[in-house]
Image (cartoon, rainbow over all chains, first blue to last red; front, side):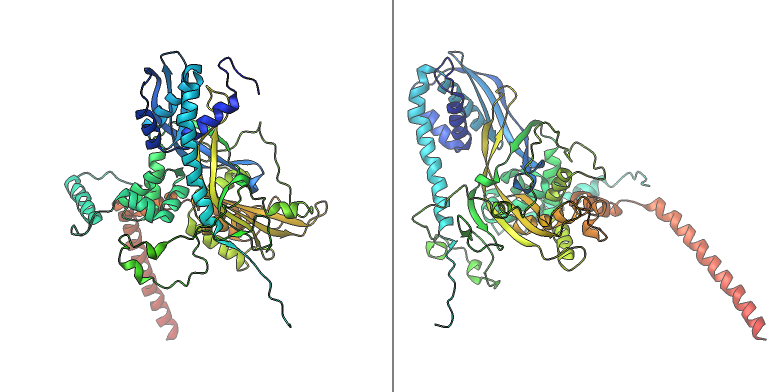
Length: 153
Length: 375
């Protein structure tokens, strides 16, 4: 995977954008409030709510079709060093999109990358994984163990 | 024909105030909060989102509250809101194969890789009113403690359909349609014959009751060839990926729960095509299992034409199904009869009066002739 000039791959950016989008808005707010030095930023695109048409595939693997839309909010910001952060997050929470865009910009900035990655993104990931694990463990408890009755013994 | 009727503004305003009061109900009872609807009437929310064709739990919950629990009215409200949103674009197709499974069962194969996971289900409940629910639990955790397993469920469960496909017993749907545009019911007119993608979108938005009854008619013999089998039903969260134009690569926007159903239908083959099973497909937002199953049955029935099977029943008739499935359109047309039709009816009234007079006149004359003949 080619590194870009700031030393991260596209895949890495996709991963942190994914976590920022899937985390709870208040978790991002807490992380932001917890930052001792907040960077200055300006909006290139103010948070805007719209929709994304969600597509499925016929039979799960066949031709594409439109299932229905979902609400989503997007935002683009620029931090003082010039890095531009983008966010598209599910739902109508403007603050979520704004914070996700700010963190995306900071993560692209070599000056902030490690700090944000190690403190913010990793703890968001832990919290996300924990939520997922809880659901998965509850589902696991409903797994059926079939057994066949042996007759005539 | 409608004729503009003036007046009634005050009465209408008062009627809406009365509606608001009725919606609120007895004021000594605490008012419903949106979060309560979202959390505790989740299946209503899921249905409203699926048929309202917009995934947004909070909006659906508000619509349910606003409509006093009338789900078809709530669906209408959500559809109307949807039209106000600018559309950013289309998602990448969701990957249901990598779903984070919460429920997954097959009634075609007993032992399936990944196992049968019941998840939160009304199956096997006794359908007896649970009077314990009459009193809120008030923090008494004993009544609804969840069982938790030590090990998490395995995600990326292989599809049951793959077991049949490996034997060459299933129609191959793998499609590379990247360069083909996908018809969209919200932008393109519904024209016949409709492509499968148009049919699936229509069925996904379609009224659960209507689709369910059509599916039932199929099972009772109005069109079904052989007994369909539930290949697999799965419910869980899938990630929605979107490619923003300015970025040019896919990013995750979030995760949404969906229900997917695959039905196996026996197809005896024709001249060149070998006998095999054909999939019927159902997909909904949230947990709408009955809808997804009915959709899968009707999807297959609507493929009768392309499969060269004769079709003669309502559920196989594309025009009948697709043009009557939408409950917003249907209730709009049925309920428009409430609007003033005073002039139309006057015309009918005059016509009927004349007809009746003519009828009486004729029968009097006929009676005269009969009397004469009798003499």
